[in-house]
Image 1 (cartoon, rainbow, N blue to C red):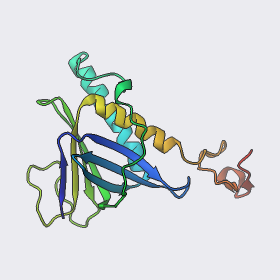
Image 2: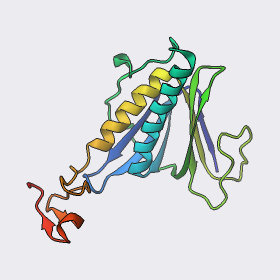
Image 3: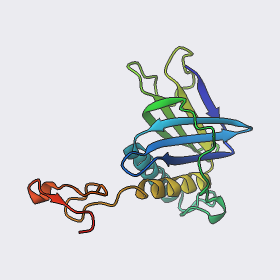
Length: 187
């Protein structure tokens, strides 16, 4: 399977397509007319955004405040644009790895295709016959902006039930806190 390597990409974003409750989530890297789009689950997008912020907060803590690592997403790096078209799924993500490259001061994100035989995360040599891999190296500022957008994309779905926090469908849902009784979404 191919390895898609962007060091750094011109653009790296999370996005979703479809109606809330039926959305398909993507990570998308773009550079020099090349576009790589991989499909992943909503919780993976949310977790990746959370982990990026935790990683950068830890770098800030350990360095006593590095000038290269912003505490928040720089406004100039905000990207609210739609995913690039045509939107073609290169593969479905199984595992995601995240690392800090202290020498280059970059965040490394690797998304690996779902596979019965995954390769070692962030390995130097990736076997040509292994699962597909998308690896990007981005600046800390771009990573903060990615995380901020990813959190907005996840939050733009169905509103949570005020009782159980599960997502509400437009016609309501069966709420475990109501002993299986249906609640309306305008409750």
